Image 1 (cartoon, helix red, strand yellow):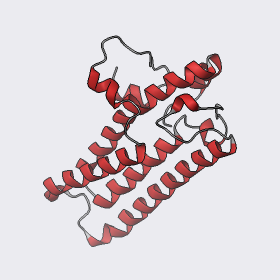
Image 2 (spheres, helix red, strand yellow):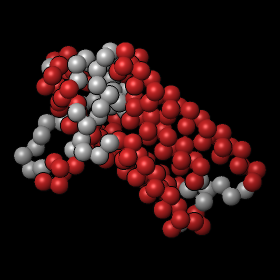
Image 3 (cartoon, one colour):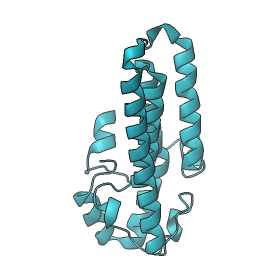
Length: 181
């Protein structure tokens, strides 16, 4: 399966394969997603430092566009993440991404009608804002890395747990709504 397929398609097979390595299983649902976001933001910054001659925007006339794009992505990211948290709070279910097996309600309304993971989408959009601010194509690698990491080590285990709790209702929801956008 391609990385693009993993990130955007509905027909993911998240069933646990018997060939998981110990490292892979130890990373599942262990690092809080905000910390993962900060780690990837730092890696993006480090990549830019190493490739500092490859900046997209160095002309001062384009700085306005850079800051508008940064602000827009940051606003969308914050909105998406907050909307997801509010939906969870309204449903009186856990917001703790490290314990998906404690979910008491399947939230499918609001932002969850557009994305199965609006809080993670918000984090990815915030990384897009950071990439715009850094103004380097190389920084986009951090966004892709973040999304792949989250899909494998956070979303897949969460969805296995939710399928175990909510059964066919969650399976139908997965068929209807994409994991990211």
